[in-house]
Image (tube, rainbow, N blue to C red; front, side, top):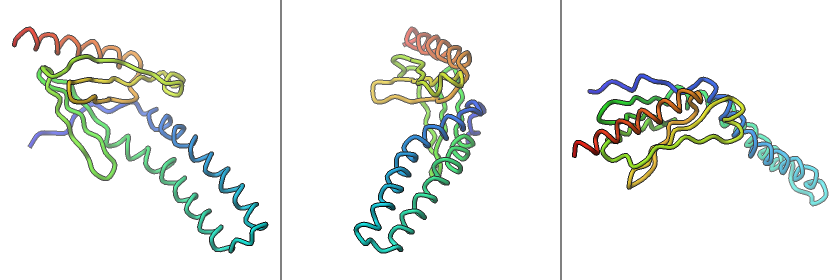
Length: 159
């Protein structure tokens, strides 16, 4: 059996994912607070309000604290001459091998949160789909993009 990929993404990915999860969670908390104040006017039973708070507390814990740490531990990648090996997942760990001969183009991208932490995502496009290696240091992402591009070009010349 093949060994798991060796390279991890940047540790700051956990912070990026936490901040990204906090944005919608904050909106849901504001809605829940508003509904709690409205519940008194419309005689909503207290137990329904308490269930809403419990669900939101659980969702906050999972999406902001637990899942980003697990996600980081599972995310791995490795680039070989003939293929790219990517592993990710939380409950179901998925492993993808992308043959270099199928790579059409490689991009790097940054959103505002990634840019703040000096991180970038490498996107590898094939005819069928795109594969991402998220949250790499900017310099590492740029070098990886260039390396994959070189290796993909070499494979095309060999065919």
